[in-house]
Amino acid sequence: MSRTTWSSSVPVPRQDEEERLRELGYQPVLARRMGGFGNFAISFSVISILSGCMTLYGFGLGTGGPAVMLWGWAGVGLFVLCVGLALAEVTSAYPTSGALYYMADRLGGRRWGWYTGWLNLLGLLGAIAGIDYGAALFTGAFLNLKFGFTPTAEKTFLIFLCILFLHAVLNLFNVRLVSLLNSISVWWHVAGVTVIVGVLAIVPDHHQSPSFVFGEFYNGTGWENPLYVTAIGLLLAQYTFSGYDASAHLSEETSNASVSAARGIVRAIWASWIAGFVLLAGLTFAIQDYKGTLETATNVPPAQIMIDAIGESGATALLLIVIVAQLFCGNAETAAASRMVFAFSRDNALPGSAIWRKVSSRTQVPVPAVWLSVGLAAVIALPSLYSATAYTAVTAINVIGITPAYAIPIFLRLRAGDRFQQGPWNLGRWSKPIGWIAVIWVAFVTVLFCLPQASPVTVQSMNYASIALAVVLILATVWWFVARRSYSTPQAYGSDREQAEVAEGIV
Image (cartoon, rainbow, N blue to C red; front, top):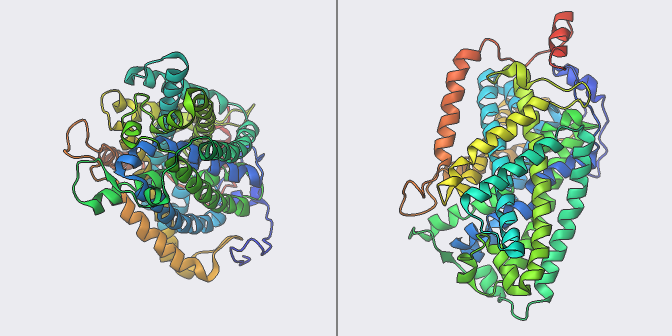
């Protein structure tokens, strides 16, 4: 196989992706209608700085403050870029909808693939819950400004369910609509950040000093150790920098996926890294009243910053920009999660796999997988009805589920050494050092975000992410003994019987 470096200036060979998919063991059943930009766009939309940065901005203000948010973003972004580069290399070799778990299965065996798949699924479902619940919070703040709406926990959850339903319906159409919406999302995010930062830079009479923005430390967690507070404050950046495996999950619907999916992952990370830093700095410079921002009646600190800086009318307009971006983000994540459900069911890994792997003959979309994805996301967010800290726990679920799933195929690729057959997009001699940096970083953040985020630790304030992780691992272990004989990633399709089994999944 051709060996190239990861430099964009080096030409990479185009291969027959349908034939490559058959070589990996799968008969093509999804429509390959997404281009390279669309593949980049879905990961960029899922990362969504206007979702992650905005929804956890209040958490950042109280957990380390501006200094941790800004410098944490810069540092976390660098490490995540290493993870993305290493993952992109493995994606180029194995461009399938199963993505992470398929890579782990091929490189390490069935059990590696099994647990990677369950972790990836937990992370993806946690991401849908976190993104769409964040959109519900901002929608509540918007309605509060516009109509005097009171965003109680029950009303916010109802808005959340409506958003989940919207995303399910949009994902029932063919992948061209998903690709179109993601392409619009890229430009919406770029224009949105430009408008928000520009308005907050020009309109307010007062701005914070650079020493405040880059040096102010604030601890509202109840913990006394500043290093611990700084560490858990990294959640804002690490949560935002997740979901870029969407490019891999949509690879069976992407042209020239062995190259385009790998590039989509890397480009989405560095573009978000730059734009996110600008957004966080712009918001923080515009803070007028720190305590008032933290204790805002809107429940959304960025909304309070906008109200204080430019008035309610201007804040309402800027909030609308953010909400639309978050809706784009949730729609993209629903697409990615449903493809993971489809792929995992295709290999008989989920209870009821025969249902979830079915694909519409009209739209070539895994319809049951879409509904299951949004349904489970709703269940994950249920604790928000009674716990004030449940939302940050949901975001932590996303991080501790999906981030280890990124590292497992990278670790197995490193362990395989020269036995790993590189795809047309690879890191060359940088593969090992970047890969080990990625693995070590993931091990650190996985432990970190299982830890309690507020003190004292009570039923209301505890971090439920660790419980969610334990439940999924236990469920995966129990189900392994039930489904281990039927679960398998195929070596190759070719017999009439195997072709017929694949066809049964198309309705």
